[in-house]
Image: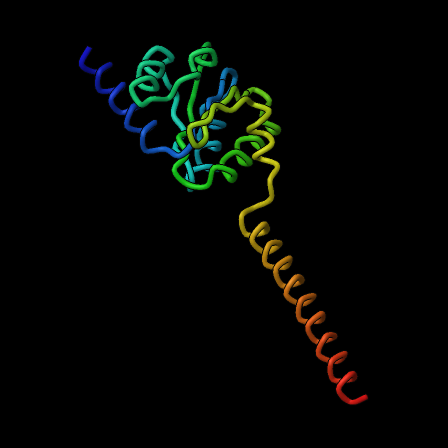
Amino acid sequence: MAQKDASVAELTKNFESSNAVLLTEYRGLTVAQLKELRNSIRQDAEYAVVKNTLTKIAANNAGVSGLDDDLKGPSAIAFVHGDFVATAKAMRDFAKANPHLVIKGGVFEGNLLSADEINKYASLESREVLLAKAAGMMKATMGKAAATIDALREKLETADAA
């Protein structure tokens, strides 16, 4: 009983300290494959096999609701502490290579996510690419503004000269 209480406390702490949670089914994966998955997401997340009942209790203690329906069968959770999109991409790519890994759903910024929604996040470009695109759009807009102002200046100079 004390061990179960400690497990619930640890899971509750993980739910509270994570900015996202990805729930998966791992049935059919080997220990080596699970290790490979853990290594691929280690930078941004912690992946752990969990007991469904204890996880339900811990999620409710942490104020996370809605995962109860997905907590059936062998379950494992990725507690994301870093980049959610990078973790979602790594999980999606691993699931493509290893069809036994099934992404059931998750929680991101307090919102319950379906597997399809997680795949949408996984299809986003990296943060660096999105920032570069935003910077490029701002540069283009500033270039257009500068060209417009210069054209106005030339028009005024031409009008003054005439």
